[in-house]
Length: 287
Image (cartoon, rainbow, N blue to C red; front, side):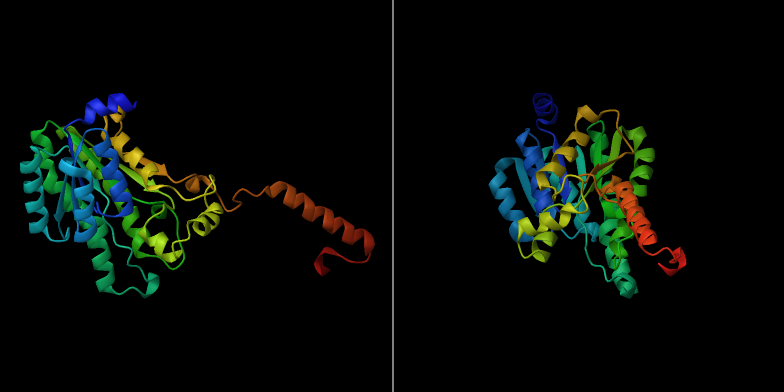
């Protein structure tokens, strides 16, 4: 698939919001590696500029607050003028602001503005450019948090659940313009947030993640990036409105995790029988 993707993405251009993050950098690396250009939008000027310098002529960094429609529109115009067109939009930027039930109205509006509304505005801004290229692809970032409740977290999971449905709505209405829209739902992935919370201890982060992921570890940013690139390529030409779990099996693991429940039940039954035999007068109500 590598050689085919190389030819398909050569001289194509991907616009990546939140492109200066660890996952954003991996997405940019993945696209540049197969001949595509990348436009990195981020509020983090230092990391964004450094990434663009490292990637060379195939990259353009623009310092942009995606909650500002004027800045967003100007960035799209600059990107199209610089590379001659825009083919792909990767809606990666997000806020992790979340105090759960204690979050006030301002926090809700801020989180939804970054995580949801700005993705819509980015798509609206990019769509005419994609149409001028004869079509394109959008990849939205949802999350494992979109489908499960997580204690103490409300804003992030709710916004990601909305992104999941937004993906379906975009796919439906952009299909006539030959623009495919899909999403990826990463599991725990080595990122700035996990790096900070774990104190930079990757081994410790993997040990904790092992309980929640069938593959027993965190994901690598490049593993998410590979799926994003696939969804933009012609290899996924008949894929739209879909969500791809890049989660190491998180989504399929139930409350039993990987523990053998039936043997545990049988073991408990054996213990109960032993108690009954040693204490004939003891009833189940007394256990």
